[in-house]
Image 1 (cartoon, one colour):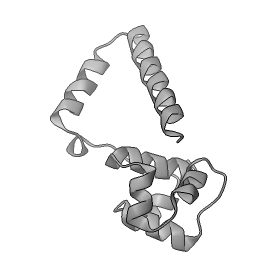
Image 2 (cartoon, rainbow, N blue to C red):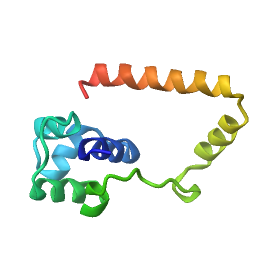
Image 3 (cartoon, rainbow, N blue to C red):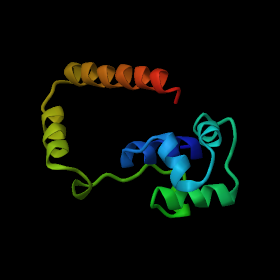
Image 4 (cartoon, one colour):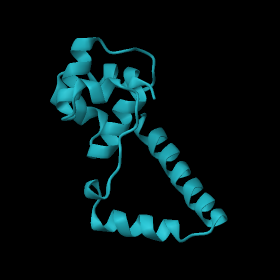
Length: 113
């Protein structure tokens, strides 16, 4: 996972957008967009500001591993939805995965992210 992918994952996880991250971190929104699109790599100073704004350690931001998900991190609704997803057949899961992928692609197109 690239630093840009990790930033996006942390934004999604925290329910924040690039503009909010820019305001919280003091790093320009255009720079954050470039990091997420892997056009630029943040300096250590910028990475630390971003990590602080996202309330994670610099290690979490830079280590390249996806965030672990535990039941403690999820709401009751999220746990219920995962349970329902697990009861689907393989083809039903593929359909749900496709819907989510299309939704996220359209969201990125609308937001320019």
